[in-house]
Length: 158
Image 1 (cartoon, rainbow, N blue to C red):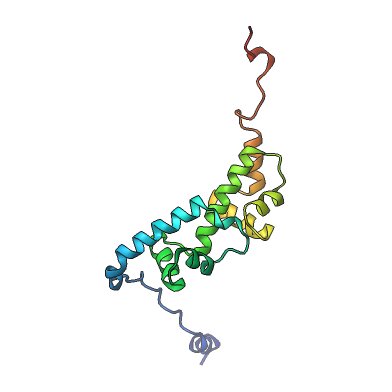
Image 2 (cartoon, helix red, strand yellow):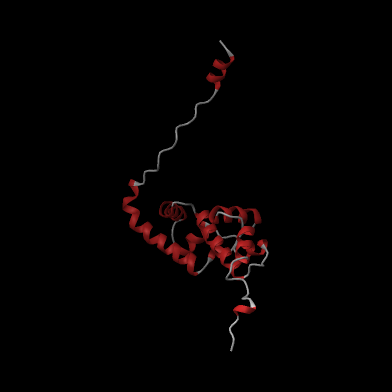
């Protein structure tokens, strides 16, 4: 018996790729989930609870008067992402707006104002959602034509 045959026998088999989840058993809960998800989005956009760095799914469940696990499952199914991704999505959008308003603000200051507790998490989330690093985004915003002051030849004359 050669060495390759021994290695093949000891190597664990690769588990099969999981199938797409079957949510057919949730058909009865779909109207409830749709309404709850609309309430989640409304609260996230109106009250901006994600600005708090300690914001968690339990706090959101308390605000919406619902079960934590049902809320988490609703977010997962309706958005296709988990709670943490949803929170970071809102934080990154807010951070990009802050950068547009003041492109000379420090990146760590933007991350804190957006609700992120750590700079690496902010950088990772920003790159994941915006497809560029925060510093690259800020540099692009700084150099955009809308930010430049008009030249003297373009000023309006009385």
